[in-house]
Length: 160
Image (cartoon, rainbow, N blue to C red; front, side, top):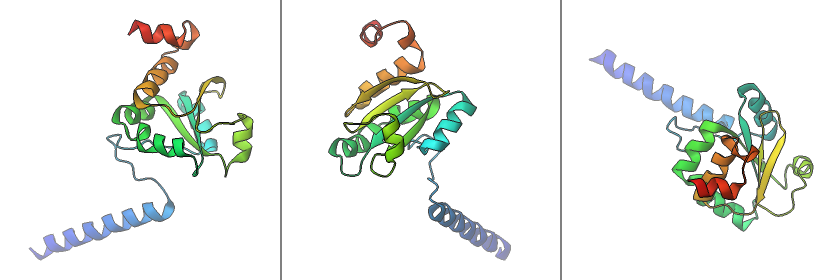
């Protein structure tokens, strides 16, 4: 009986220490059920895309940007968007104000700006502005399935 209480206490302490370590390290504690997008830094995402042979989705934002905040609250909280991005892309989030060099590589003007790249970093397309969840899913599917290579986005959407 006493051994059981000690085991529970040890498990509680270990769990608390693990959570504390994750929070201190700044590592996002994402659930395995895709409850949040696993965002990568630009450098980490570019390398991971090559290693995993996955296309990249880059979201440029700023803390002061109203539409960026709206995408965070709506689009990036949508379960279908979260699951599709995590499964099929390497999602990268770039702060326009803090990462000016990266933003200048893509000539970012309006915010938010959304870029889609091949796993080798080759640019496929971009879509500036706020994107609603259902539209982002369609764009992601269009890019992920390589449909952009042989049909327009309008034709892709019409065939569904």
